[in-house]
Structure formats: structure tokens, C-alpha cells
Image 1 (cartoon, one colour):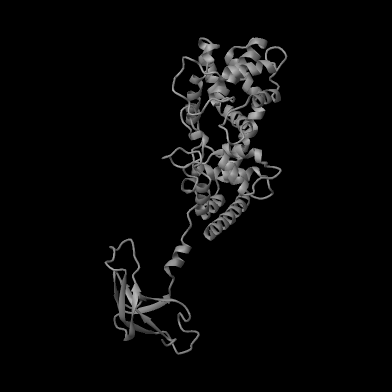
Image 2 (cartoon, rainbow, N blue to C red):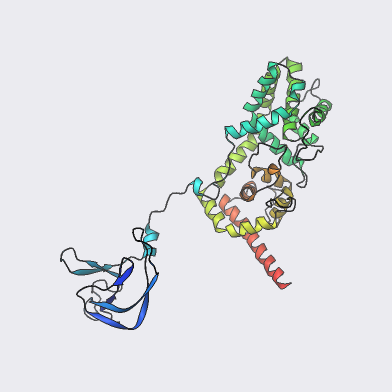
Length: 416
């Protein structure tokens, strides 16, 4: 092809054509032209057409650097100033056009986090309405005080959840089911200054703990999804706090049960506030465009890691889920633990990554992670590690370590 010439084949709708009035040439060998699609066109019967003839356009003298459109892609258009004439202009490819299109602003609803279920008022109320009737509060709170105390518990239920999760994380080894131990329950009350020497002594707290753990004989006979142990489940921990409030403030300061529970949650506000702040700060840092792009980039790796660290405790026939123990093992493999985030804090990262499930009595959904929760747990571990880097950078370091470990594991398996 001489440098001063352009050979032209036009796509006309779903076919090929030449430029009328221009000289033509026959190609020594047919070329195959891929048709471009457009929204206003019907689907072409074939995507590629062979062409053996072209139109010829002279751009200028041979070797002229000033020739129109020299050294660039060109397109032939109708000349609006000369009816029946043509002119040649630089051509932008379809790929360049798509790159220059305005990029849509990032939105949470289109992100990898889109299905995340936040703890709104409706979900919190639903969970509290599951827990409160399962307690034995009606045995020691009578009449209108019972309903008023229930309202106070609903009002403070979000704070209650923060305390429960923090205490449950400190009470488990990762292999056991989540619940609050007697030692941790006593420590949180002592730290808040709730205990006294008359009505809320350590021995009294132990007695109330045991009373809250006992299941009422006349209650629903369905077995709990979690086997009974020496820890308090979520509804039992709520009953325990109500018992403590009544013993501490009703007897010593002559408060009504609703006022006593209100006072207890006020005294527990500092330990409830810190976990709540941490969770909000984590979600604000994690639910971002940068983390979304990073997770999508490593989506295949994340699925492989989740698959290899799930299913050990899942019942046959159910979708594999990640237990706290499997999650902790994955974090150890990712080399996440440090002085700021020791291995004993793995259950807390696990719970930070979990969504709230209203029913913790007859369903085990709250005890194991689905894939989306697994991703959030991984982000929570990166957040809690407190390294001097952005959450995105810390998360990328973890993913790089996991990626290297899985590549090595695959290579070694291939040698066997």
C-alpha cells in the first residue's frame, strides 16, 4: 500500500460497500472484515464478511509529512460542503471511545458489598422480640413493669449487642459456640462499677448467672440449635443483665425494674460505646470504592480461600460455611496476627464480620460465615491489626500472602 493512499471498505448497516465515484482496486487476497454492532441495527446474520475490492483515496504526494491525516487512523465521511463529495478525518477506535466515556460514579448498591444487611431499627426490633419472650423475666418482674422493661431493652438493644459480642468473643476459644462465660460477665460488671457489697456481690452475680442459664420447664419444648453449655446465649445474657439491674438498683435505690434496667445500660455505656465505634469506623473504611476494586480484583482467590476454609462443621447437603475455628486458621495462614491484633482477638474479628440474625435459638446461621461475611471478617482483621497503612493496603498485603500460599499449595499438590 503506497503511503499516500488509503484503501477504503465501508460498513453499510450489516453489509460492506465501496465509496461511489472513487477508483477501485482488487485485492490480491480477500480480507475478512468483522462487522461492528449498533443498538439501532438488527443483529447481523453473520459477524464477519470477506471483501476482495476496495476504494482508493489519494491523501497527498508521496512522502509528504503534511498530507491530511498522515500517520493516523482515518475515516471517510460525506462532505457537507460538497454534495456527493467525501472527506477524510482522523478516526477513533471503538475501544478508545469506550475509554473516553464518562465513568459512572461508584455506588454501594453496585459494589461487592451490595447484599450486606445493615442493623437498622427493624432488624434490631426483630432480634429483641425473639430474645425477650425467651427470657424468664416474667418470673421476677410483674404487671405493667414487665412490658415497660421490655421497651427499655428494645431501646438499648443495639448497645446490648455490642456488649454481648465483645464478651462472647472473649469467652470462646474459636472451637466452641459463642456465649458469655461467668468470668467475662463478672469482669464487665466490675469494670463498669456495677458491683457492690450488699446486693450485687461476686457471689450474687454468679448466682444470677446460673439462674439465667436455666431453661424454663414450661417454655417451648423445641431443642435449641446450640447445645447447652456453661456460657450464656444471647437471650440468656439479656436476662442476666436484667436480673443484675433489678438486684443492684431496685433493692439498693428503690428503683422500678424499667428504671433499674435503664440505669444499668447507662452505667455500661462506656464498654458498649467502644465496640460500637470500632464497628462503625471499620464499615466506613471498608465500604469504599478502593476496597471494592481490590476485592473484585482478587475475587477468584477469595473464593478459593473461602472454599478451602469452610465446610468442616457444615451439615451434609448444606452450603459450606466458615466456622470461627476455620476463620482463625485462615488468619494464621495469612500471617495477620501481631502485637496489636493477637490470635485471641480472632473471634472478635469474626463477629465484626457477621451480620445480625434475629433468631439465635433455632437457627445456626449466626454461628458460621457465608462468603460475604467471610470477606467482611477478613476486612475486620486487617482493620484491627492497626498497622500504619490504609485499610486497602493492609488488606492487599493479606491477600498477597494468601495468594502466594495458595499458589505454592497448588504447585506442591501437583508434584504428588
